[in-house]
Image: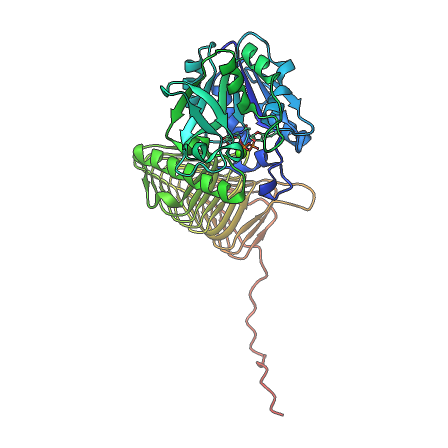
Length: 468
Ligand code: UD1
Ligand code: CA
């Protein structure tokens, strides 16, 4: 919408979080609460987004700027609210930044799961002409502002804060969600009329409703039943509850797509998980950042997988940790990884590669059919097809100052417990004898043995225990 401006309230202290981190920067599903709200806001294609900051303003503004990024299609603005005298006072700080012509949508920085479709419905009802409140029925409305409707029930007369409500008003279960859309010129007029003569001595944003009614402007309510969308985060307990609600929703959406989850209550997706057909995920797995799982991929229990692409038919056995960070990790079709494997940034496994228990791979490419099955390290290495990398072998890739590369060509067999001191190349088809320290290149097809020769001594007596 070309004339939509969005105000996000994020100045509150969040006292009940009992944290040094400003509340809106606490994360849900791996993303700051404010990041979720910004994503919903941005989906509405506003002209501008104004964040009201106060508590931890510098930190909140820097984080907001970073989350929005340079290429945003809307103007990002900040208004400081010092001191914090209530929600009406908060929005008053944005007034100089809001053009009269257009609509203002007010969001809360601590209500992360609001859906952009719901917000669009509120804006559609507003149609640039009429104030619309997003409301919800709570089984327990304690603490919320109550929606007082007219006799016909089709318009709102007032929002009464819990602390100011009469017993009859407290029995109303329809509550204000904290979200409203108002034609901006009207909003400015009514904000100018707010007073703080109430039980909390605050300037309530919710009082704009009374001023609208006094001006003869009808106020509408758009009521939803999905409370998760308007649940706020005020404490660690609420944050954890909302995290579980989010994760369960996500798990159900995956299952609707055909993903088989051993237990939807034991899955955490902190980012984006893309699944092809017939993916199966066992219990207690965590996915972070961007992860894609190809057709028929199976993920064993207790895996943590971040920023990785896992191709069709690959199997990740239990307790495997994959973290691609910025470089990413790729696991080729039909590869077998784990249990207890660790794939770090830049690990690229080709088709049918096997990585077994306690094997660490970093910034290394393994071509089709290569195997490292036990207790090994492959860092800064290029490994050819069908290489067999023995148990306990490592690439010594770091000389204390710089990293160097190890090249292991096709069909090489590296015997157990070898150290390949980079930079070094093992030529195609060569063999490295077990226990070797290889510091010089090995020509193709040769056997390299780089260890002390075995001596069998006869003239030797095993010590015996002395009796006292
Ligand atoms: C507010 C509504 C209430 C509604 C509830 C929904 C008012 C007066 N009441 O109550 O009707 O049912 O939200 O959750 O608006 N904030 C500022 N500056 C301030 C005060 C608050 O930026 O001076 C921010 C907070 O950081 C928060 C939001 O505004 O993001 C809401 O403030 P909060 O104090 O939680 O309002 P409630 O009392 O919950
Ligand atoms: Ca609140």
